[in-house]
Structures are given as C-alpha cells and as structure tokens.
Image 1 (cartoon, helix red, strand yellow):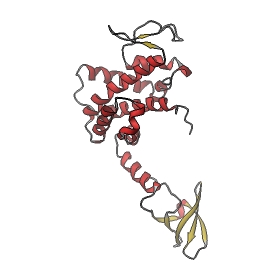
Image 2: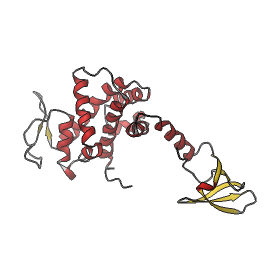
Image 3: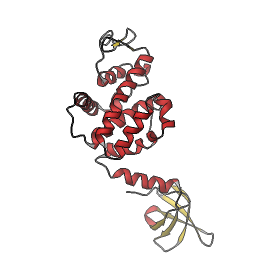
Image 4: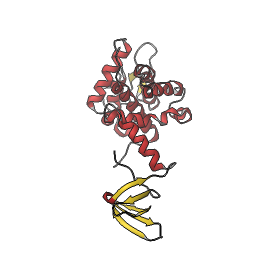
Length: 239
C-alpha cells in the first residue's frame, strides 16, 4: 500500500532532515526545514512520514487501505464506490423512489450481509435500466408481459421483440451507441461480468442462490454505479 503524499505532510528524510512537504512533482518533493530553508529529495529518500490528521491525503490513505482488504480488485472498487451511495440525498436525484432500497443494499454489502445486498439492489438495477430505456423511447411498457423494443431502435433485430431481463437490456443499450445514456455499460462491465450478472439474476429470481459471495454483491454495485455514471454523463473517462 503506497501512501499518497500531500502538501503539508511532515517527513524525516534519510539524511536526517525534518521538514514539511511544500512541493511535489512526479517522484520528487521539496521539503521546508525548520530553519526555513528547503531541501529537494526523491520520494525514496523519505525515511518516515508524519501525516497530518484531518487531511484528504490521510483520509484517502485509510479508505484505500480498508478497501484493499477485499476478495479482489472489483470488490475493492465496489467498497469505495459504495460510500457515496449511503447518502440518501445523493442517491435520490439519481434513483428517485429507490433510495431506501439502495441504501439498505449498500449497508448489507458493507456489513458482509451479501444476500441482503443482492436482494435489495438487483431489482433496482433492472428497474432503473428499464425505466431509462423507456424514457429514451427504446423500450415500450407492456402490462401483459415483458417490455418490447420499440421501432426507434437502430438495430432491426431488436425492433418489436421482447426484452426479458437486465442482460438483454444491457446488450440492447450497447447497440444504441450515442443514443442512450446506458450504451457504455456492457463495455464497462465486460462480457464475463455481464454473463455472471445474468446467472446471478436468474438464481436470485428463482430462489436458487443460497450462498452469496462478496463478488456477487460487488458486481451488482458496479452495475449500479455504471448506471449512475450514465445519468451524470460521466462515461468518457480518460486516465
């Protein structure tokens, strides 16, 4: 676990000098010593750090350390992404009338109650996905059965055909490209995770999933966050 250095951190350099970081660039830092002079060093030249409490750097350090204690990388990211979803005031504009279920599902995930998490969140993911595609005019509601893809869908293989589950919605949204806020979800989750989501959804629906793992719950949270990013228009992320 690497520490994310920040301006203001107090450090002891390998040469014995003690001071406060006043400049960071790449792997180099500049430290202001007690007498007011400055000394340059690379990060490897730091022998000890005395981080300030109540700083963004220290808070992120502990958050990342906590998140790393997970099943895998996806589970680590899900733990971090889950934190903002604990705030009903944050969730409500993104998922109206669903905030109660989402917060309960997130609490279940963080408390390692993964069955509670999945049973609360999966219907919200599928329901919100369906609602958004209907609002965009690509799905039509059907009180007698599954919704159908509308004539507006650019791919004729979807038009007027039933859309039976969340995975079909994800694939249909991908084919919409720039015409949908959800077109990115398939590529973001990846083929393997989308297939895992299909199996998980079916087992949950039919009561066949008894032992639910952290990874199952984390996958649903990542699907939820993919929807959130689409609503916010944050799908063009560069590193």
